[in-house]
Length: 545
Ligand code: SIN
Image 1 (tube, rainbow, N blue to C red):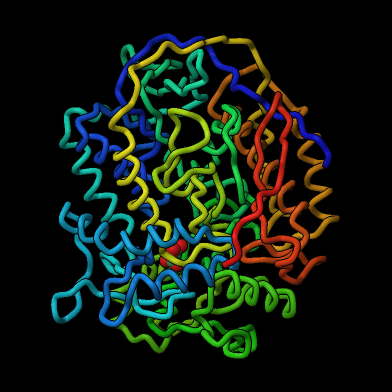
Image 2: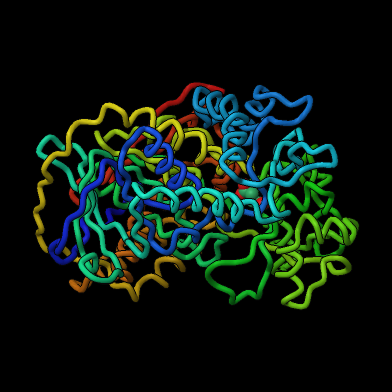
């Protein structure tokens, strides 16, 4: 493997201020907010750090919903089976079992806490279907604004609690450890006012990473552009194990806004297919019916793959989503926001076909942790998209991510009750280099070209060589741009090397030079650590499922 020189610690000014809390939670999506509230329920003081403002991030953007076996005839067992099937042989069965069994009660607690879900005509939570689910089990809110409603309810609770101290515009740089290698805080940069401004240190008895995804490492993503894989990169720098980064899920239906379009792209929820919309190729043919028995509601990787093949076959940069049969009422009540995004660009989904294309959506991999958030570094927990509990395997089942964030974040708090006393951090500020912020565009371009939806050895090797060149474009100047570019380079290097190593196609990892799934060789997890700036990847065999 071409070695890429990665940064082992982010360069920054010395911390100019220090604050303390029992627990630091980094991130304000469903996982971070729930972890903060659950820690408060245990009587712990919390410092909640968020890179932008509390209500931004992937959770608020989630359209489809949250999956749980709540409907008549459904059961955690069926949810379990659908999750394993989507995960293509790499799910951790024990983790999935916990998720599906505890899911329904966790969603009910979210409702009791104040989140308002859409109801059916009998007054029960209305449920729809998404790809890979054999039952209607997706609860939604505000039609297609599920994440925004969940975020509203959780943010209101957090804001009402004076023992949750909140820093917005706070970019966490690195973890701090004590002499026993236990995590005891973070260094961070805050764009604040008064004393809390610039680089500081926050000290705590435990740190919970809930930093979300890494979609911004690609040129087109459904994620907000703050999703730069910060949690994964800083955990690697601190010596934690990361796994499954090659499994980046591409959502099959993202609004096509032109071939030159870059950055965050508007999602067209899978729930629209759950209500009856179908994919059509450029000739108007409904191509999914010949590809999978679940047709347009096949698992997401299957649909994304089929869309990609159609795009290659036709030479046109998109396929169509046909929602013209849904009728005005469904569009207005269930998908008001998507309807308005389409209409803004002159497409009326009531009568027009919607041009769609796959784009990077969800990282199934992340910081290796268990269903209590525990990582392999004492004092460090990880929850939500930045974590890798093994629940998603090679391809996350639709709407399981909000559920995972909720269930695991509640469980984390149960393990924060016997924390040791606050310990002293060892701060050694040796100047290091950072990746020049100007290189960000090159990182996303090379990642997308060689390690995007379809990969092969030639493309991946070129990407890795290019990343290795980009790793030399350094600066001593600390800035948000250079910290983020450094994190992106670390994440892309891991992802590309893992993708090169996995010589098969499975779930959301698709190799054109190894088009088959190979269970005799690849029923393994590719995991790795960062050691003195070098990535060390290895394989961990997992049980058959
Ligand atoms: C969607 O609404 O299609 C996205 C749901 C998900 O990613 O789970």
